[in-house]
Length: 247
Image 1 (cartoon, rainbow, N blue to C red):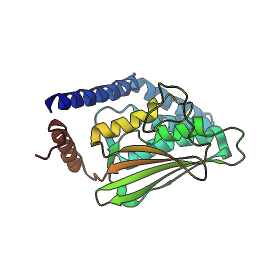
Image 2 (tube, rainbow, N blue to C red):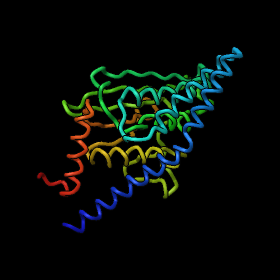
Image 3 (tube, helix red, strand yellow):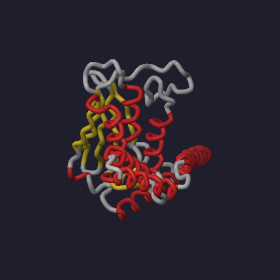
Image 4 (spheres, rainbow, N blue to C red):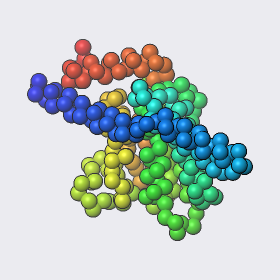
């Protein structure tokens, strides 16, 4: 009915505004940030401090994608570059106690995805999944798998302590998109953004691994060109206006 449709549209608009607000908060004076990091990089390199130079370069790569204005979508290689920059910063921090691997089927490297959908899960694994007392090396891997000709999944896995029920009623969600100790926002925001931009059949799901740790399954449509992305967005917008009915 019209009332239900209006409520759905209002809800999705709020989600988009929320996501855009937080994106804008991350865009505080990006040119100053870039210039400062570039200056740190060159100063460190000039004095032979390779580690500081590399760290500044990684941080610049991380923020270059994070604060980029324009489309909410980027290519999968750009998304993977953003995630790797974050992982490399953490590797510099933890040295040989943290391992990060990526195995993505080449067919998906031309796809467009909502930006910053991988890094929050890597961060969650490092901050909340790994215990300093762990005897084994902390590991996070990113891989892909095919669902069908039009759908694929990105898989983010870790070998940490796994999901634990939250006792905070404000972070407890029916879809279990939380891990104990998180504020829930970063992970939930990824799922909400994917569903808002691409449709309810897509999104992120957290699962407990039998061997320990967490397995994140991010389901996405196969969109391998700007034209297909535009067509897909129009299709989703039309479906939203008609309440899911075919037109």
